[in-house]
Length: 274
Image (tube, rainbow, N blue to C red):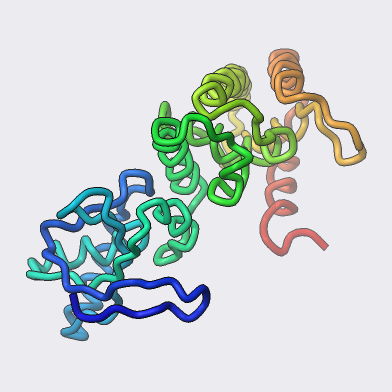
């Protein structure tokens, strides 16, 4: 231990330490490491010939330290075989769930964020089974991340970006306790999978017509979604995805034109809207 200090916002006591590298681990709830980002960080640290950014750790049990913020930096010290890791030790272990949203060392993409949220959800369901999703709304950030996390667990290549606009509008935080909520989340994920299977069949038919464009899934979903911007009262989650599946199964691929897909992709791109 190097110092005890009060952080300047809430006045909480924290410890500044040099910890044995082999005792520091990634938090089990956070996203997976990006090998490319670890490589870039390692090269930068080697060029500078010094390590200047402490990681943040909590201690779930004596002699073990989890980092909810700084896992890429920890991995760099692993690669460089450093003896010790400079770390800010937060003494309240439950703060691990509060610190995860501050992890901006590498910006999350949708898959990483969703997987991080579902891992956090499973841990909380075991550790605090009487709590609800609404109690952890700040940590989860958005309910659709929970459903998407389950979908990405089953299929790392799931087209989350295509379904996210629909999910954001109809997915809400659930009121039952987390263990019961997880069962409902599994059922919701199953409905999305069914819609995704129907979407896959439509896309395959479109490709057989010689139309191949990276935006084709988004294009089809935009034309089959039961949601419209004009609607003030939205259907329930179940209704939305059952209707979406029906609309996809009835979709007429003979009317799809490449130039329409291309135009839609341009309009949807950043800066494409007036």
